[in-house]
Every structure is written in structure tokens, then in C-alpha cells.
Image 1: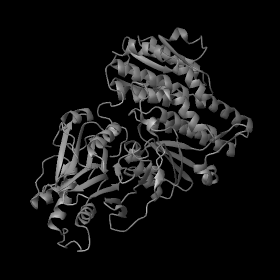
Image 2: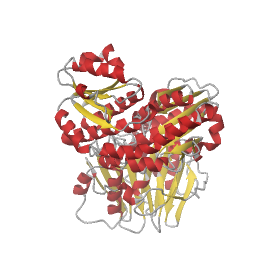
Image 3: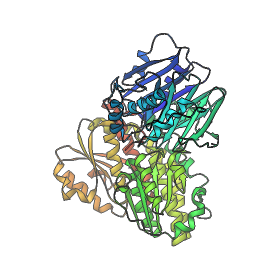
Image 4: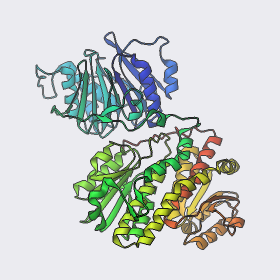
Length: 622
């Protein structure tokens, strides 16, 4: 989940690399570095910490180099220090590379390389790749003693030989001092895009580092490499077979990845939810005719209607959206459904009988565990659909069909607008399948009218931001919180607790409210904050009883309730209201005040909400 950027062109590379790294910093910010190729050598600067620390350590003069690679790291192998920071150079000093991913057999390869006389400086798995390429390049022969073909480019050949020895995942940009007019990008399991401009090329982990310079790009598939030289670029597999890639338009704009007056990306993305949901729903919801139009899955709707079981697989916030989806499919479509952690699904030898549909959910479309779960499901013959945000992402390309969220880039590490869009997409799917199976026209139209009103209702919740900040101020110093909900609001309680943990570093637990008295009630201490999602719903009276259980033991109650609910006021130390909607769509509203609460708690505690410690936006390694 590191960020890589590389430039090959006619402009000065250093400022372009630094700018690109800043746009990729949400992918990792433990350390950073750049390598510029100039005068037959690598000029390398790297440092622990953020990109700002790297800038401070750059030489005062600006290099004239027009070729370079850069990296912002989320540490896996080795501490986040200067030695372990990327770029890494091989033992000969001729090969430099940046890497996103994990090399699973690095220990075995390292032992062999040391035996062959290769020196190592770092603790990283990445340095093994650099040394392996350097070894093949230096010796001009593979491990079996076979020389490189005379008509091949030795640098390109050495990269291919090294990759044939590697097990794991990688997105890499690679340079060689002997080939100043060549750069190589390779991909397997980690995202990699090649931006194609006028006489310039940018390799990057995602489009945010490219869009300022060009809107044209190719998306590499697993096992492919892009070779850039003075004549242009060409693509092939790592087994040396030529492939033709389609040049595609990047679907994000520069203004979408700017702060535009907000203090943080998370704050901006919370505020964007009325607009992002409108974009997600527009053209898809036909209230008049009582139907949903989802072009990405239209050819599979007959199969979906007849499905016997739906498995939703995801990680983190997307898993919480999937849990809402489980409830939606069972209640609205009457289809048995279950949500699985992708990280566990792939190892459990899951039962995927005929008629099972798997829905993979991911904002980035690059989540490593979810990708592995998809491969498991496809191998067993299941129809696999994707619900992703990033166009052209690995999950979007690997699944049989899918639905894009269409909410624009989400930069904040703590997901907000992607969650509400994921729930909206799952709601649309469940309503459409329900319509085809048993729901009446009146019931469908009522649900669709409610769905289309959600964006305007979120605006009313956002108007309470200052009030919610006061609640955060009053409770921010408590180190243990509970989040409780029932029915469709149980997943919201889980998501609210996750948001608080991610960015404020407050310990929080999300629970079904009824489960509290089966053990967790022992945690309640005097004035401990307990957040209840207690809107008017089918289990309203039950959750009132749960609130009283907490109050009786001295807990402080923060209650999210329905607008105009006077009955619940005496039970709340702090009351936040949301507009009324049907039970099935309540998560789209009730999650918003919990996002705002977590945001303000983190800011008031002095934390950087966009770059929480130990986290990165896209988990592209196991």
C-alpha cells in the first residue's frame, strides 16, 4: 500500500516526483525518497517521515535530471527509517527501483544472493528484487548459467529473469544507469498506471499523481510490464510476449483531489456526501416506473434473480457496508445472504454451491485480500460481481461484472462517502431483485422515493456539525467508548466505532445493543460514553431498554434519534437527530453524525485525520 511515482520526459523530474508523492501520501507516510538519474549515476535522497521531511532534505539546487523515481512508504519489512526507505539500489549501484507489494520468498532469495556475493544494506524485501535484477544484469546470465540472447536489451531481460524467480505482489518502477533512455514498470497484484503525455510519461500507483500532467493512461494487468524509451513505450508480459494496451481517459479531475477550502480531506468527503450520493443514484433510479437501472450488471440480472445465495466479501468499512447489504438482500429480495471478511474467506475452503453469487466490495478496487477472495470464488465457478469506486481498478477488471460507486476520489484514509455509496448501491441491487421476485410496485416506488430523498436529508444532518463538535469536545478525553445499535443500525454502530478508533486512537467497541448484557456491560464505568443509534424503527422500544441499562450504571449516553422524537430526550445526555426514513435506508443517514463525531474528536485531540498512524488508504498487501 505504498505510493510510487516515476517520471520520464523533458521536464525537470524532481518537482514532478515530489508533487506526485504528495498526492499519493495517503497510501503510506512512514518514509519517502527519490532517485534521479543524472550523469551516469543515481542521485538519491530519502528520509523517515512525511514528504515534507523529504523536501527539507533535498539539495538546495534543483537537479536538471529528466528521469527519476519516487516512493512514499507504508512499512511491511523493516522499520520506517532512512536505510529501509525506497528507492533501493542493487549491490553494483546500477539498478534502482521503487516497490509497492510484498515478496513472499525474499528470505530464500536473499540467502542465495548473499552466497553469490551480493551485499545488503536494508531489512526490506524490496532490496532483494534490486539485487536480483542487478545480479542477472551484472552476470548477463540466469540462475542456470544461460546467457541473455544477443538481440535483447540486457536491462529488460534482467528484469524479466528476476520476476520469474519472485513470488508475491508488486508494482515497481525500475531504472538502470547504463540505460538512461529507458524506464520499466511492472505489475502483479499491486496497482500500476502509465500516464501518457506529450513526450513525457508518468508511472504511478494511481491516477491522482498523473492527472495534472495528462488525462491519457494505460492500466497494466497482472504479469505485464511497460517499457519506456526515447521512441515511446511498448508493453509485454514478463514472459516476453507482446501485448496491446488500450489508451484510456482518466476519469478524475484535478479539482476533485484538491482540498478546496476544507482543513482535511475527510472533512471535505463527509461534506460531499449529498452530492456524491446524488451522482451515485442519478440515472439509476426510475421512481416513475418503479425500477432500478444498473447497466454494469444488466446482463446478469436474470441469473441474479434466480440465485440461491449471496456472499458479500470485503474488509474494514466495506465489510460494514456488506453487513448492511446482507440485511437488505434477505429482507427486500428474500435471498439468503452472508458477509465474509475477505481475509478469512480465502483460507476457509468456503462452500460455493451452484447458484451462489459473490459480491466483492472495495473503494480502491485494489484490496489484496478481496482480490484473493475473488480469485477463490472464480476458481470455484461462482458468478462474481464488484462494487468499487476506482474505474479500471484490479477488482473492476477481475470480476464478471459490477457497479461503480461514482463518488469521485476518496483521499481521506478513513472512508466516508464510499461507505454511503456502497450502501446505496447494495440498496439498489436489493430493491431491484426484490421487485423481480416478490415486492409490489407500490412498495418498490415507496423505497425509491425514500432513496432519492436521502441526499437532501444528509444536508440537514451536516447542518449540525458545530453542535456535534461540542459533543466531541465534552467526551474526547474518555479513552473507552461503546457504540450500540439494533437491526439495520447494528452495522452503523460497528462503523462508528471503527471511525473513532482509526483517527482519534480512542478504544471503541461496536456491538448489537442486545448483546451488551451478555458480557460487555461489565466494561461500563462512570461517565463512559455510550453512543446509541436509536432511531424510530421496528426495535425502538427494545433499544430504549438498552439505553436505560447503561444509564443505570453511570454511563453517559450519546443518542442518535429521529427528528421530532420527544420520547427519547430524557434518556440522552447528548441528543443528535436525523431525518426520518424507512428502516432499510436508515444507515445512509445514521452513519453521518458518527463520521462527524469521530472527525471532531480526532481534530480536538490533535491528530492528523487524513494520515492516521499505522494506516494507509488502500491495503494492497496481506
